[in-house]
Length: 110
Picture 1: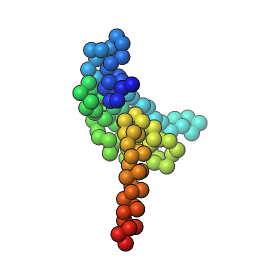
Picture 2: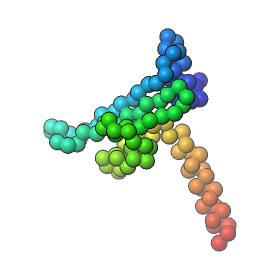
Picture 3: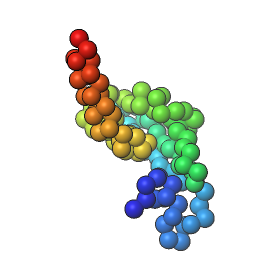
Picture 4: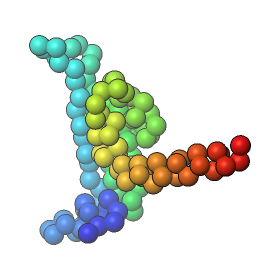
């Protein structure tokens, strides 16, 4: 099992010499028809050296801007979906556990 994104993507049989891969996700709001100006394209390039680049509508961006660009942050599953694409979902549980420990320590010191 690959531990890093580059190992999973770039070590597949027959594709050992690839240096980059792309994930592109297209979003648009539909109310019977596509709502004008609602299209959003979020993409990520992952490189063999484990570096990544993020893009919004073809313009280079960063993780923070990509997650802030979500059309409706309360829409079920959208941010989780973006986290999976971007590769940060693996940090969710450790961060939640660390926050719980921090809250306990704060209560102990009050």
